[in-house]
Image (cartoon, rainbow, N blue to C red; front, side, top):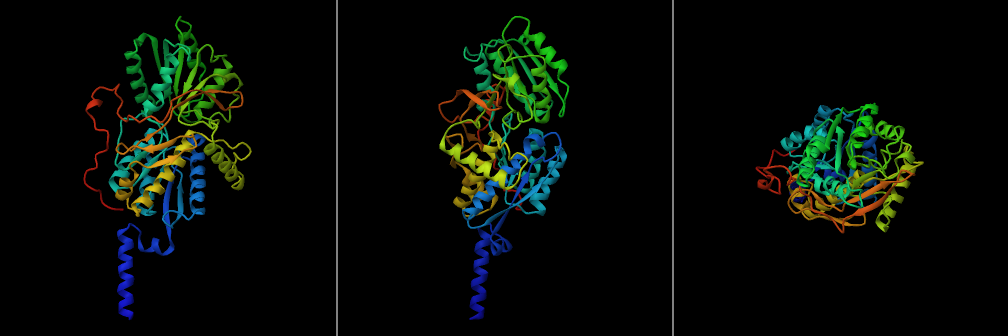
Length: 427
């Protein structure tokens, strides 16, 4: 009998291992996941809240029985807005901490830093922020917007009658890959609309830049030369605070020169006097001000979590687009694991295709069956005096992402799905 019981146990262990559930993990019924966000440095203003909303979502899932009966146990690391450190921390999460998945990164330079690590170790990353596209990886799911789900619609709006009919554009960004590639795409798009280089001013500032006096003066001069001018801002991180303060100081009103931002949401405006900024714009796939039952429930859940955890934001709990994208990604990962009946990376990747989720935006979003990007709605909002956004334009429904922009030569020959290749070595 003892011999039979031994072989029965051995068979069960083998079955669990085949399902991607290690022996120790099966015994204590937990699954480790990684959270890779800057909690210090220039990007902490944007990323800290993504760590917090991830922890809230894990608690929500655990309260309902976990993932395949496994309690989520998060490992949180701080890469401190240091791009090489992101790669080190990613390696640590996958190789040492043995996490099943990582939720993290904000800037494209941080994502580019960790990408070779995830591909080498066959890890799984969910990336929750709008970006420049021009990338597809088997090991990454992109839950933020591609350019055709944010940048292109925003500029089309600025050129429209409703958006002010802009004829000149200032492309202003932080000096790294996301703003430079996005602006390369936007310059080509503007050319296709008959806007010449003489009517495009392109400027970059380093991470953490704080003095925008000269640049705002330059924008005012550029705007005074006749044609209606608009600013497209891809400034990232805490530089947004001095930029918007200087806009107010120099009296650059939205009625004169509207600014549309791609990396400024409710959280970044928390520390800014928004009264002089009323009417300036942001383009996202979600705003806190959206009215629907899913958003009402999510905002209530977030407010309760912030209060219970005594977060610094508890007195004014805000939600924003990358928070929503984080929340969607975690839930879709859970659904894919349960569909695959496994935590195994390759099985989960296959099960992610076509996953759907009723998002706080009010729309059911879908993971594209091939290209690892979400089909998402697009909203353009005007800043209100209270730091919230009034939606002035939106798509009728979710838009399929174009990771390879048609405005970059040669992209028409690129496949709309990642190269799967040979399976990498298992973790």
